[in-house]
Amino acid sequence: MKCQEATGDSISRRRLLGSMTALGAETALRAAQSRKPNILVILADDLGYGDLSAWGGRDLKTPSIDALVASGVRFDRFYANSPVCSPTRAALLSGCYPDTVGVPGVIRTDPGNSWGCLAADAQLLPGCLRGAGYHSAIVGKWHLGLEAPNLPLRRGFDRFHGFLGDMMDDYHHHRRHDRNYMRLNDREIDPKGHATDLFTDWAIEYLRSRRGQAQPFFLYLAYNAPHAPIQPPEDWLERVKRREPGIGEKRAKLVALIEHMDAGIGRVMSALRAGGQLENTLVFFVSDNGGDLATGASCGSLHGGKGQMYEGGIRVPMCAAWPGHVAPGSRSDRVGLTMDLFATICEAAGARPKAGIDGVSLLPEMARRAQRTIQRDLVWMRREGGLEFAGRDFYALRRGDWKLLQNTAFQPYELFDLANDPGETRNLAKAQPKVYRELVAALMLHVQRAGRVPWQQPA
Image (tube, rainbow, N blue to C red; front, side, top):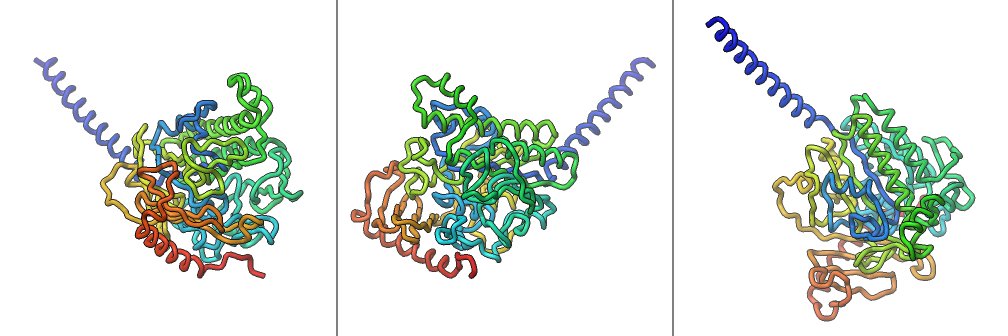
């Protein structure tokens, strides 16, 4: 009897301890879920919609990005805010249409061919996150200004390790028009190595510096790959040629450059995992615009490419992963723009942006929470120089499945029904005059709003 009583007491104690352990585990889980997440945004440069194996690319292998897609949600109808670099980056960091923050076109070294100046009153993401307790860093390509006040540290980042300019003339020498735009914070540096490897190494260095820190971080990792010039490491190029017999030289170089970047992303994700940071990190991967067809890029079945208002120029691959919050292997057909990442990140971080941003949080969609359907017009713009554009701007607007676009500054507007004509082959401008007029009227309202914002560098 004593033994049986002792056994009963032991069972009771074990049940009590088990309940306490379960409660402790649940409390710990809730605490972990309530912690502010780290944020990692990985931005590729000129990556086409068809240039990832997860998006149907058949002659290239991108296992690291594919794994990231599999671990979270893939957005099938995601758009860059512009078909070129600077405006999309301005939208990402401001949460606004780029021409409403002074960046309608590409910012360049030559002031006679530079088409933007980031507005002084634009609130950028690192500044907004600072109010929520974040440490922010940018590694890689900035492309939103070459001098004060539009430098990363002046616009809210705590650390900058990368390249100020629009593109590098050489991935190994890191110059643009014989100028060195490589910086560590405000200091000019002259590192050795392939730019993709450098940016990967610097991102890993930053992640390691944040290990064990209570303060959450925001890391914006902006590769310049696979932007021209297409210069993959030689061993990566030879690997592609051996694996893909019959592939052309131009395409082989681009595939190798993309695969090299993918390997770097894999190293970054491994560093997150090794540092115990991955489980509490919200990761985004996206491209700044469509693929550059002149370099051999593939935009899949989409019409057009970089620089154009057709789908191939603005529709881009995007995925997001956040363990415990985003279901692995999920997909969304929600239409989103780069500027929506600003609002999404702010919601996830508990940050409060100032009123008036254009972006809308995608977090409810990512977390599969009930949400109301948001009806909004979407606008794209580009201002450009040269004989083809003469310094003028041109636009596209989407309302539902209707898309109005002007592909150059001097081309008549076209109207497409994307639901029935995703390849944009049938111009319905004359067949649907009412829709055409309504979309033109909506676009004019945006043009008037953005026209109030100066975009030129002060004299």
